[in-house]
Image (tube, one colour):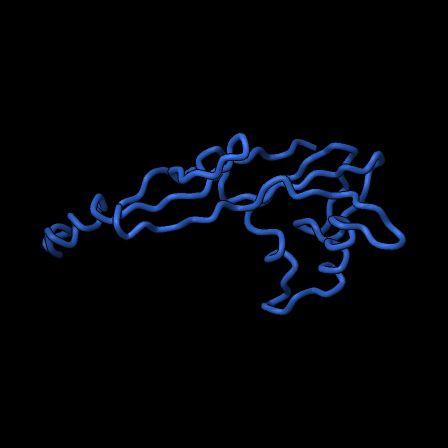
Length: 138
């Protein structure tokens, strides 16, 4: 089965997890309906992993507990999963009129442009449409 690759233009909107166990494992809480990952295999999916454990706004307690045990282990099981990355935090700087994300490189945290491109409210094309008025669409 061929796995879909994450488009680079929206990679900052995806979560990536990795099986660190020495054996293949089944993770019932991974989207879309559980996934089997080989040793060292990674899976990327859209959104934040904790949001995937919600059932119409209510946490799925069984899936939540399974994720917690997979990540941290417990008295019976050892850790078998790591979260390599989650969707980037998008922050709007009102002084600079720009949206930035947090980027970590070589243990240094810095602001960077989002994966989907730069944003400044002063450069919106829709502002030109609003200024031109409805006659633009006639």
